[in-house]
Image (cartoon, rainbow, N blue to C red; front, side, top):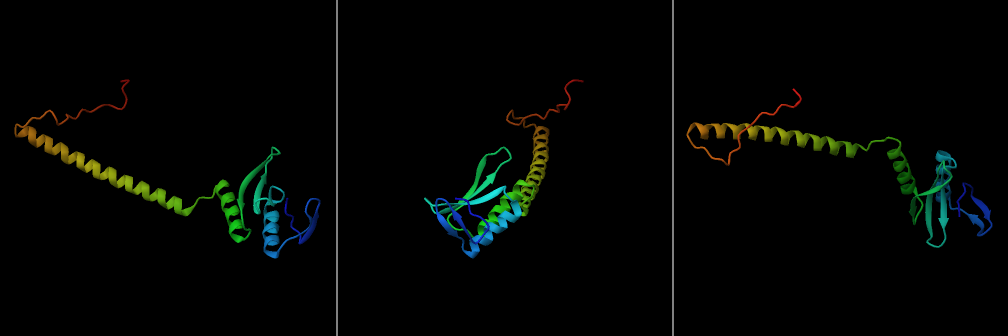
Length: 146
């Protein structure tokens, strides 16, 4: 049963439906922001509120269900919408930046370790210690065509 942004209305199956002020406020805010694109239904069998998107192709798609209807649900809907409209979560962005920084540090340390390894291998060769376990460095050109 679709909830409407009015205090009380008549439904053929459920008779007179009266919405509490907080539920009415949420329904009204969703209606103001999305028009008919998003609607809130009441599912009497589960007693959950169901947020549904009316798509351009005529289908209805479930957004989410909730056993309560309050500001948390409105915020959840707005965040989901923001994610789809290109909003970037600052926490996720900070995590990616940190991962990139750690990867750059790891690469720098690995390069330093490679250089030290080459120096060690060279010193061992100079001392006459030749071991087949130490690989010989070979420069491979990036472009193999020329």
